[in-house]
Amino acid sequence: MGTGQQAPVDLSVRIGSLTIANPVMSASGCFGYGVEYAGMVDLSTLGAVVVKGLFLKEREGHPAPRIVETPAGMINAIGLQGIGVHRFISEKLPELRERRATVVVNVCGTTVDEYAEVSRILSDAEGVHALELNISCPNIKEGGIQFGCSLGGTHDVVSAVRKVTSLPIIPKLTPNVTDPASFARAAEAAGADAVSLVNTFLALAIDIESRRPKISNGMGGLSGPAIRPIAVRMVYECRQAVKIPVVGMGGIMNARDALEFMIAGATAVQVGTANFVDPLVWNTIVSGIGDYLTRHGIESVDALIGSVDMGKH
Amino acid sequence: MPFDVAATVVANLALSHDYNVLALDAPQIAEAAIPGQFVMVKAATGHDPLLRRPFSVFEILRDASGRATGLSLLVKRIGVSTGLLYDAKPGDTIMCLGPLGQPFTLVDAPSEGWMVAGGVGLAPFWTLAETLVARGVTTTLFYGARRNDELFYLNFFRTLGVELVLTTEDGSGGEQGRVIAPLERALAARPADQPVSLYACGPEGMLAATARTAAAFGRPCEVSVERIMGCGMGGCYSCIVPMKSEGGGFHHVRSCIAGPVLDAAQIVWD
Image (cartoon, rainbow over all chains, first blue to last red):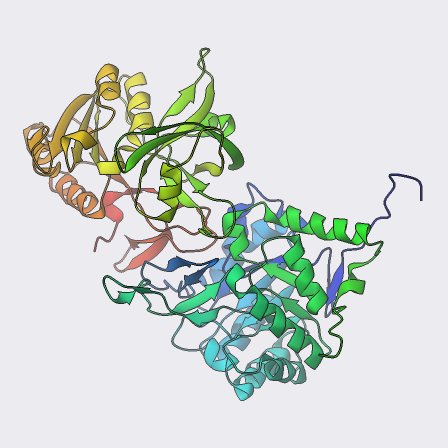
C-alpha cells in the first residue's frame, strides 16, 4: 500500500440472517421512530434504526415529569407511549423505507400472545428487518420486565414469537437480574437469533425538599455513562454464555465506548442517551470505529468481537 | 435542519443576580429561526450535567447590513446548567441545537396581537413582537414579574411601538398583582367584533389562567409551554403535554415537536 492509502475496512456484521452495514444501531426509546431525525441524520447510514416499542394498541404512557438527570446519566419512566403496531406500519414505516433505513422494531406485549401477534403483524409488513423483543422495560405494570425476570417467561415469549416469524429475533434483556447470562441462554435455547442488553437499571431519585420521587412514576430506569462499566461486564458474561450474537448497549457516548463493548463481546452496539446530547453522534461513532481498525491494521470489525484478553480472570 | 452549532459566546449580560442574556455566534440558527422556536443548549462539555436544556430564541443579533449573525438566550438561574450559563464568558463555546419546535401562528391586521409574559416567559416575545410589528399588527405586551427590577427590555418594546401593561407582585412597578387582572379587563373592554389573538409564555399557572380567560372571552390563544426535555427532537418522549382527543379523553403530544407553541384550548390543564 502506498503512503496515504488506506485499505477499506469492513464494518458489516451479521445478526442471524440480517447483515448490517455497520455495527451501530439506535437504542429503542431514544430515537423515536427514526423519522423525527430524518431532517438531520441520513437514516440509511445507521447500521439499524431500532424504533420505539410497540404494543398492539396505542398507549399514552406516564404523566410528566418522566425524566430526571442524575450524575452522568438520567432516569426515565416514559411508560412505553406508542402509536401501536398498525399506525406504525401505516404512518412511519413508509417513510423509513423511503429513507432506506434498516428497521428493527422493538416489540412489546402484556401477554405472550400479544408479543406473538405484534410480531406476526410486523413480519407481514414490508421494510421490517428484525424484531427486538422488549421483555425488559422496568416502567410498566404488566408485561415487559416480568417476562425478562423469569427464565420461563423469557422462554415462553421467545418460542411463541419464533413460531410466527422468520425474521431475526433479538430479545432485549434486563440487567435487573442476578445473572443475565442465564437469560441469554434461555433466549438462545428458545430460538433467538441474538440477544441485546442492557435495558435500563431500576433506579430512584428523591427530591429532598418534597421527600417525593422526582418523576411521576416513582421509580424509573437509569441510563447513560454511569451504567457503562456494569453493562460492559454483563455483555462480556453473556458473550461467554451463548453462541448467538450479543448486541451491547449502556452509556455508549462515542467510538471508544462502542469499541469497548465490541471487544467485551458485542457484535453490534446500540446508542441511546448519547443521541439526546448529540444527534449527530452516529457518524462520529461509525467513522471512529473505522479509524480504529485502520490504525490497528484490522480489515474487518469481526476480528474485534470478543477479543478481550481477560488473562487469568 | 436543525443545526448543531459550536456557538461562541459573544457577550454575557447580567440583568440581575439571577437573570442574564447570553449572546451566541450562530448565524445558521439565527437565520432560520421563527418566533416561538427554541434551541437545546449544552451548558458544559462532559457528563455532568449531561443533558441539554431548552431555551426560547430571545434576540436575533444582526450585523450592520442586517444579516443575522446570532441569537441570544434569556436565562433565569435555577440549577446547575443555568448556573453555568450565568457564569459563561465571552469566548466560551456552547453547543446549540436548533431552531426547534413549532412557531407562533402570526396574525394580520386588523387583528391585534396581545402577548402575555410572566418572568422569564418574556423570552419568545422579542422575535414575535418584531415580526408582528413588521406586519403592521398592533401589539400589546402584558408583562408580569416579581419586582420592578425584574421587568426587562422595556425600552426595546416601547421603541417598537408595543403597548406595555406591567404588573409586579410587590407593587414596585406597574400594577400590583398578577398580569391576568389587566388582561381580563382589556378583554372585557374589547368589542367582540374586533379580533385579537393571545400569545402567552410563563409559569404554568399563568398559562392555565390565560387559557381560561381567553376561552371565557372567545379569543384564540397560543401558549408556549415549558417541559423538562431530554432531547428536543422527539426522540425521548419526555416532554409530553396532554391534549384533548376527539370524542373525549386525551392523548400525549411531544411538546418539542408538536409545540412548544400549542393551542391553549386543546391542552388538558391540570
